[in-house]
Length: 218
Image (cartoon, rainbow, N blue to C red):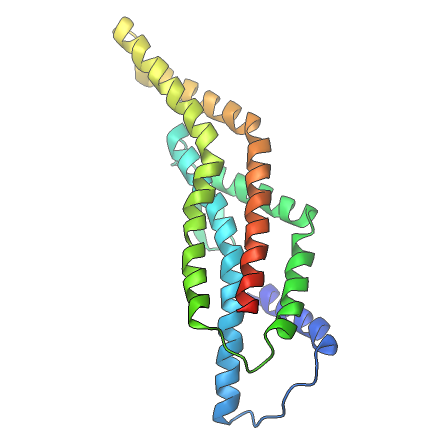
């Protein structure tokens, strides 16, 4: 929390000099409170759009981990303060590194700076802006499905094959053989579908940037 507050202060100090002069208001007046709430809503909306992209990555990792039988392998997520599967944490770390390597943090900073020009202080979001944010929530499921589908398809195929083997050889102990096979197939599927993950994540970031641009232009 302290790091986030310090980062917010640093970003504020970097952006303020490039902005036009702000209207002089009494900090305790009603107008000041209204403007503060408006800016808070705009900031929350922009942050929520980016957060949804990373939540899609986490959801995809959870689906893959459960299908692999690794849903019990949990670790602490320092961002959310909750227990998440290790596969989700792997995808989240990978997404963060991709975000930084693609200069996503620079793009967010530029969009944040431009938002004060496109939507000056004192201008509120329109009603359709909230509808746009709610529609963007469907991206979580679309992105998670796009990331997880190749690996899930591979593991589904492995499960079907093991089911056929069990019918052909009833003496085969599926519980002792199935788990290692499913886990191995899962890791191989994750390895070979990493390019798909990169393409989907890049596309989600582009869509997020477009959504933020539409939000501040509304």
